[in-house]
Length: 119
Length: 100
Length: 137
Image 1 (tube, rainbow over the protein chains, first blue to last red):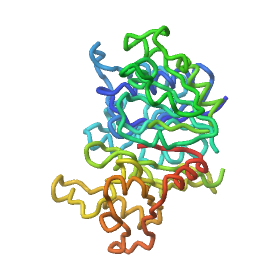
Image 2: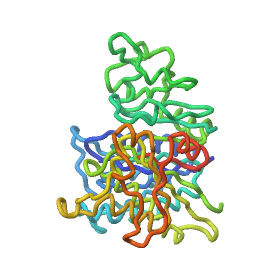
Image 3: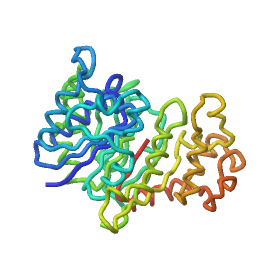
């Protein structure tokens, strides 16, 4: 089994690319791969717990928590989060915050990288 | 030369990197609004994306059905795949990925 | 593992989206990534501007004056200052009517020795082939 790392920069609402990344991560974990996810730019919208699941909006918190419970590492860009008013106390349980160098370091050991650079 | 999986998630594009990129083995994975390249024939013609020489084309089944299309609409050059299939393509068939 | 090469490819213009800025700040973060890595490991980035992304390279940007935010130009110059290679696609510059005199060619005002490299798409293709990972913005 291998290691797959995602870097995702797309917003929670207004782009389905973040939804895509979580679903692909789910499939990767189901196949036994180690999966890591870096959320930066507008993807740090995931760094706010307690999001209400309206049917008109994407909602990935439940799936993200489920995947973290299965070993997926999720880390958000600390500066991107703070710039948007998402603080340490807002972070869903299990999610980490770090600076951008965390992501760069992950690229060294991971077998494959899927970098979804925003739109 | 490399083995490259290229992800296209848009229908209209302004970047021209895709047209110029080359690979010994290239997989073009159509996701999100990129699935329209597999089903729409603008003015009766296939999407120019499908003319990429030597590439293998894939389209994500979920993103097709989300947009009201079925397997019957998909261009014969394109293989319909699941999320699990895409994981296998990334992990087993291609060395690196490019989300354009 | 040793040194891992990464190619950051910027294909969109600045300011309307955060893409170019995030490409630059992430590339610069390679300088401090060692704290998360094993001894002897490192990441070696190159940042390249292609397609409409070459518009990021236009000099004399006034983003701080107008928007109150750091300019893409200042980040590009920071890259040169830390010896992080900055490449620009020559064909795309020509297509968009840009000449070397219109774009950021150096950061001598900041004390940088490294200069912008003007390359063909064929050179970029070669680099895409040689690096471990591609990061398109």
